[in-house]
Length: 121
Figure 1 (tube, rainbow, N blue to C red):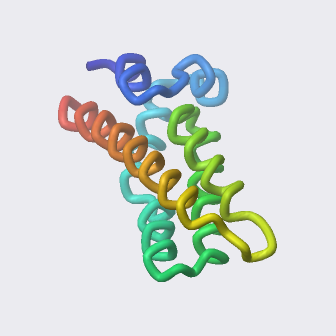
Figure 2 (cartoon, rainbow, N blue to C red):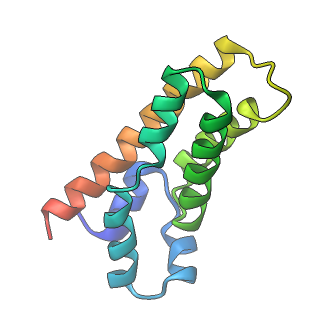
């Protein structure tokens, strides 16, 4: 699998990330670093403990990283979760649970494709 195929597999935009990082070696450097990013882990830990303030911060961070790397699908789901966590403290538990599942599925798809690409290096 090449880098463009990796992006296609997880629903990202290779064209968008290429406009920011014109060399494939730079793109690979940053997407491989994403595997060690703690935003998703922090998000899940915060949701598990019902600390929605920290979950908002972690979700917002994950969303930003995904936007910068053009991980379109994961960016969209983390954006939706961020918006559900934003606000005055009253949160729809069912919506948050549903969005958490979507973020998890998109995260696993994204990291799985990146690990597959990394294994082929």
